[in-house]
Length: 458
Image (cartoon, rainbow, N blue to C red):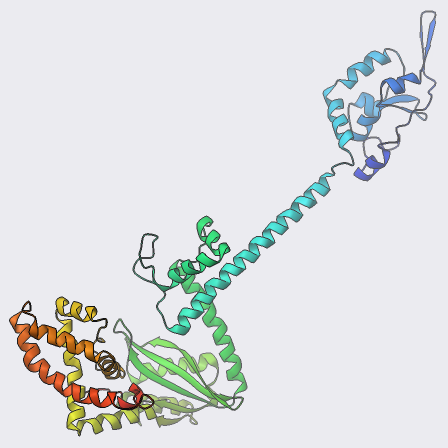
């Protein structure tokens, strides 16, 4: 011990804790005619007192282990003059009392163990929170995938807590929170990340899209031949956009993958549309695999010299152009309907009901009271006439009651009554003939896709 005073490791201190050296020392002190000698009883009186035979000095065993005062730690007490008075003073010193507390705690609560245990508990709590966060994120992704699969809108005009209808995304999460406690606690306690903001929704949609695109990319690498389908349409904000689809065979099955919508409102020329398609072919690195391209028959698209199909084929010669069969069928039905008087009148007059009822909030309310509404007029959309005819067929009696109510009720304006009784009644009679014919056809063949063709224009 005398060789390494004040430089003991934690393990050495633990080993030396119960091994206080108490040897008999040859310490003497002569005062006048009295010779005083070292007494072994001092070890019992002061349970921290220790001796060194090599140096023939006394030390404080506790201060030696924990670096106390130099007199009792390094230098030592070389004589026994006033030893008792010095010992009494030392045992009440601040440094000795601090070291004494550390000495008693030595081996009972190691700081490294305390830190390690604290870290372990912190890691456990962290892992629990990570598991909860993953479950919450999984629910958010499930809601995103569900709304995307069902083609439902995510957001509404007001999504605050006071709103009666926060639209689909938030309402579904509120519904899940009623059954799953961890989601409820998350929304009640978390003020930083709730997952309901539009930025989070867009990020999740982007993540889901990335995963789907990676899956499509793997399929495109496997397949040998690919056809592309494109069509220009108008979204709800009346902005022109192009939809693009890849079609190929995988495991003897025909697969069609929707790639996305692309804004073409600023440039709907053949050069602009073909640039969008070429960029996507380059992005997916499938240009050499394109064997077919199919579009409608407009001159911008199908032109043999400067059309989109011509520009694509000049770069990829194997990409043969095929006129879209759906467009061809639409044209056949369109021109065929024009030669049949009853069908022509039926298609032309479908819009009369919507026009009549939509121009007055009172008449629109009358339809809502009957439990339905007519689809918004849009002759440029293929499925408008089909949806309008199907709605009239489904709510035939309700529509009849609404028209009769306008004619018979004295509370309506005379102009409305005149319109309903004259022109609208004529239209109603023409439509009634075909609707009654549809109602007599068996359900297996009376679907809107078979009985009521989709017309592009009147």
